[in-house]
Amino acid sequence: MKLEIIATRPEDALAAERGGADRIELVSGMLEGGLTPSIGLAEAVAERASIPVNVMIRPHSLSFRYDREELAVMRADIRAIRRTRAAGIVLGALTAERTVDAAALELLLGEAEHLSVTFHRAFDEARDLEEALAALARYPQIDRILTSGGRRTAPEAAPELRRLVQAAAGTGIEILAGSGIRAVGLAELVRETGIREVHAGSSVRVDGHPLRQVLPERVRELRDILGRLEAERAAAGGSGGQPPLRS
Picture (cartoon, rainbow, N blue to C red):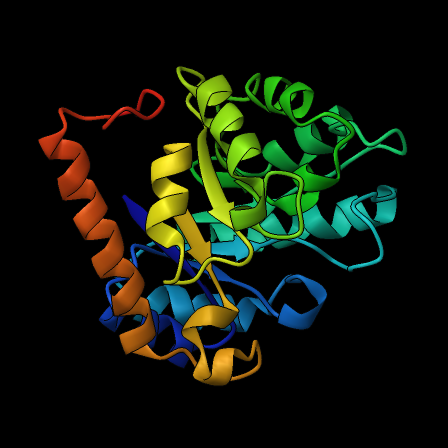
């Protein structure tokens, strides 16, 4: 099972790594839901971290709709990130009708050669989550979807997340549960949904504040819970009664 932690600076990434994180999502503007960090920051974090670093590609927080000029900026950012040691990018785009913006997505993916791609929580704004998942499954470059199941937080959306895990089985896309992930209730959420990857931000920081530093011990708490759940599933023969799990 994978644990992804939000970082906004090199110290966050290194603290998350010490705590047992499997992957970093690097952003700026955490209070705005995450924006594209500077290329200098992306280079520094990817150079210093020994776990994969995925970099946010989001030029503003006004919406998940982007015009031609904004897409040109996003493409340039992806090209720059591709020259760093970052493992991947995090992006998303919707149309005015709240469907996946295939034209924008194809432009961005065209710059993302050899990068892992996560479709971010723009997904939760889609008019129909399973329709959006089916649209994203047409793109082999997309490895995962970060989602709270269309609700404010992931723990509120256990039935929706379970349906998404089932719908994603065999597509090559992993459902990454994010928003409201904390130690309390994590085991229950994983057991109810069958998710294999979780994403945490504020809960692993000092005072649970998004602008404070990451605490390795908070990350380790989540990592230990996931480790116990992984052992539990293995003992149960793989799924533990949950939706089929991908290898």
